[in-house]
Every structure is written in C-alpha cells, then in structure tokens.
Image (cartoon, rainbow, N blue to C red):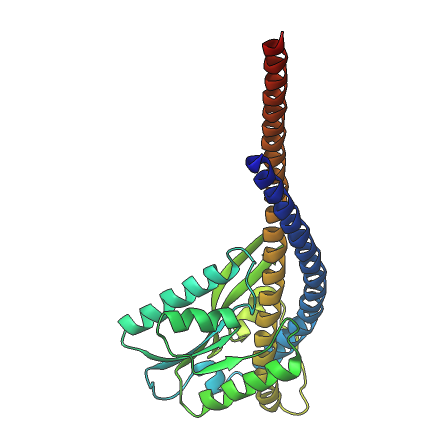
Length: 293
C-alpha cells in the first residue's frame, strides 16, 4: 500500500512539472516570435548602412580611420564582451557560449595578451566568478535590447578604442542562423575586420557606378562607420536573444515530452502495483474461506 501511495505522489509531481514546462515552452515561443521580428526588421537597416558605407568608401580611396586600421601602436590589450542570458533552462545555450569565451581568454593568456572582460547576462557573471576571472563591467540589457542602450555601449567602445586603450574589441555570443541551427561566434567588432573597400564593391558589381557625395565621402564615412559599429552590436544582441529563446523553447518541449513519457511509465507501475495488491487481497479472501470449510 505504501508503494502505491508513493507512485501516486510521483505521478502528481510529474504532471505538475509537465504543466510548468509546457507553460514555459509557450512563453519562450511567444518571446522567440517577438525577438525574431526585431532581429529580422533590423537586417534591412543594417544592409542599407553597409551599402552606403561601401559606396562612400569606393569614392574615398585614401580615407583612413583607426576604426578600420586599428591603433598606431599596439598596447597588447583586448576587450572581450560575452553575451549570455539572465536565466537558465535554455539547453546548451549558455554552456556553449561560455566555453567558447573561456577558450578564447585562455588563448589570450597563453599569448601574453592582457584583456578586460565585460559581460551581459547573470549566467556569465556566475560562471566567471567560479572561474576566478574578474568581470570589469556587467551590462543589464534584458530580453529586449534597445538601440539607445546598445548604442551607448558601442559609443563607449569606440571612444576607448580611439584613445588607444585596446588593440581589439571582440564580441562572443550566439549567432542565429536558422530555427534549427545556432552557433557560437567570436566576432571582432573593432577594428572593423570586413571594412568595405572598392575591390569588394567590384566583386559584387562588375560595372562601378559613379556617385557625387555631399558632404564629401570622407565626412560621410566619419558618420557612417560609428553607426555601422552600433548596428553590428545591436544585431549581435538581437541574435543572441533569438537564439536563447528558441533553445529554451526546444529544451522545454523536450522536458515536457520526457515528463509525459515518465508519467506513462509511472502509471504502468501504479497499475501493476494495484493489480498485485488486488490479487493478494483475493488470495487472502479465498484462503480464509477455504480455512473455514
């Protein structure tokens, strides 16, 4: 009898867990849809900015900027921004990003390169505290990164990079490729690794168009390059949120299915235990009746 009660309690607990994970799956689905819309809506803007920069760069062949070429003198220091989530229960999302970040930081140490570490997400703070790596700055961006918040971070990065404090500024986050594929990415934000050049434009368009720029193309690039960096950082945050929500959605769906499957197993055990108890009771009744004859 005690075994039956124990199984019944476990069945109730598993059913409760299944309802919770199902609810979390539905919430993650809603957040994923919203985050995907934000990420997709920013892509045309980023593509437009990229096209404008390419056109301006093609007309300013002698243009030079530290945002592209890097500092004049190397200082042997790098800034690393790691983007994770504030909450868990999202599968291998945080583990994959943090493992990539840890490998990169260890590589910098082996090369004798100093670094400053900045993070976004509570999970990254706890991880690096466990690894005994000091976190210099923590950014609280949340599930809905805004252009104002991210733009302020990017402007601070540009100012520190232009002052020669860092040789490189890098972002380590999860890149969203499709609903079935996400991958960790270590992206160099500064200096711009894929700076638009005239040869790049020629590869895409064989016939080079001629543009007249007012103000000059150099003045335009002074404005567009920081804008490009801000847009790239915002896109990294958006894709990280999309990846987090879809991986949480998949993880909660798998947890719900596992709970239902385990509940079915427990119900079979309950039925067997109940049948065994009934059989035992019938045997006792028949044996008692036979003893009275």
